[in-house]
Amino acid sequence: MDTVESAVEYRKSSIPFTLAERLGEGAFGEVFKATENEGKARTFAVKFIKCTGNDDLQNAMDEITALVILNHKNVVKMFDFGVRQHWQLEVEFSLLLEYCSDGRLNEKLAEQNSRSRKLGWIRSITSAVVYLHSEGIVHQDLKPDNILLTGNGVIKVADFGLARRFARRREGQTWQLYYLSQGVGALCYVAPEMLEDHHTYMVDVFSMGILFHAILEGQFKVYDGERCYGVFIQTSNQQREPIGIQMHEKGTDLKVPFQRWRRRLIERMLKYNPKQRPTAREVEDVLRSTFRRWFQLV
Image (tube, rainbow, N blue to C red; front, side, top):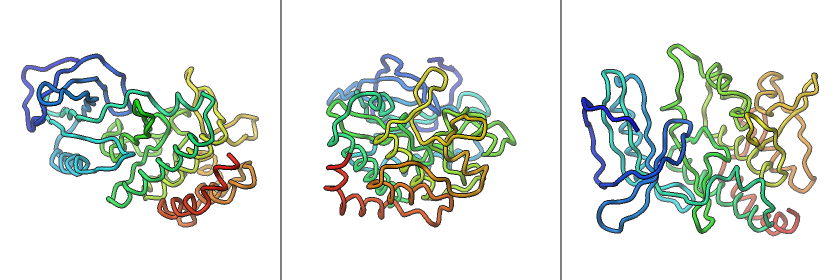
């Protein structure tokens, strides 16, 4: 990773670490594996996020500081962060995160997974979203690429609360144009109202409904050489496009084929009108009360 000698350090992580190999590049920046220099020699993932324009730096720091105190078994733990300025209009955040060694959910969906594993994923994702909402955080980018697994197979929701703050929008670009510019594969989990710049807790419920369907049904399209799992609607020109995009274009609910026993909950989660969707807590209550039936029929 490039370094800039003239960087001004606003805030230094209290946990000293040494970077190792590059793990990849996410929606907001590069990610590296790192090892703690002292103490328990823990392994971390360090995400570097560069953003242009620092007039809102304090608000961004306040938001990330709030993420550090979050603590839930199914939410990636953020241990600390650092901030430094490279150039006059470029600020870099370094987020010290829990390392998840078993990859992304998107990769696991291609495998033969047991009933208990599928239901465990669904319950864990729901529990994480309920917790985030209780802390006032809307994820806004729930998808299999942002759901990680530890070496013990524990689900961890990642990149929560970062979508809106660090999205790489061009100056003057609307949210609708931004989402559309990301390509069809990136739109598989977008709620229709997000294309109109409406971001409430209900956008996460919509994304959860698609995640449930992806886990249980395994439908996918290939975009840029990678499988994108989701709910796809056949268009008039015989193409299959993401349900959120089709709902936005038609302005109404769309019928999606489900097996009868799972239809009621997921159809409610995928309502066009966000006010008609259940809350994440209500989804959790339904799963808790009907878990035995879901487990038997997956």
